[in-house]
Image (tube, rainbow, N blue to C red; front, side, top):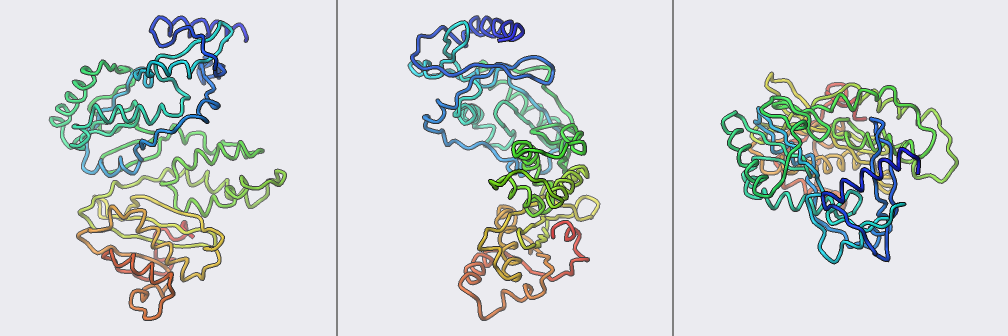
Length: 410
């Protein structure tokens, strides 16, 4: 260890021993301990629990999806964000199991008495704990909880005060504390889970996008994975992401020596340009009509869900895209376009099934307008037709030049 790391280790051990988060151990098993550099030039202590995690039965409790958040925010005008202190450390490890998470340092072995970052079941266990103590408030759809981040929202300040008091009371009852410097109260714009939330709209966080244009071309598979990891987080903001990223994803699967060519460079540049445009998504309103636009290329299909905003202009509520498998790439264009409609309806089924309005579907393949009236269908098409029969839809042909997002979808 470097002198700087030795000082950091001494501080880490002293603080956590005093808090009771760790204790000396004689466990016959132990995981490695090391430091990683943080952006502020300090060191973050880490335990490498890979071996322990491989032998651990995984907790299947689900983490909330970003789409779940969008569903809840319709009509919200005011927001309060709370950030929990200590995170995973608020959950005790069952006595008798603590020795399994022992880590080794130059000062000896230590076992945690509380959950630490790196244990594979920490996220699911913590989310389950938070959902359990806030169960009543969550049922009222008053808050959205993602791990140690809590978003409270309402369409008026009086109701927001009431909900905030409820949340603070639950935190007090469970001896949970907040980070005051990271809490924001009663605002109409809030940063949450890497997004900027406004009434009716959601944007990507401009801070995270600030350096996207300066992102250097990757020279290794690992560097490409890092770029695609960033892109995948925000792909719901990008039209036909799967089709554009297809060459880059294929490159990560090859065993051939690295050879960057024009095809991959163009895909890389296109994605950077699309992210730099910083599109905004409209928060869907289930009481208003939707328009679904779909299009397919040779390798993927994409869809956009539109709705009219307060100005009466069509604005995207979200983008989805999915790459075709080897068999689907052999489909006729007609079936690829139809499969794109199926995928779009599946992705937004919770909005489009049972809606009080007919959903208009725009596509640039004219024959699809008559699909539901066709008398001769293949077995696959018959299966798709049965799925489509659940929805109140009208498939409308529009030439590509007349559809708002077609150029970006195909």
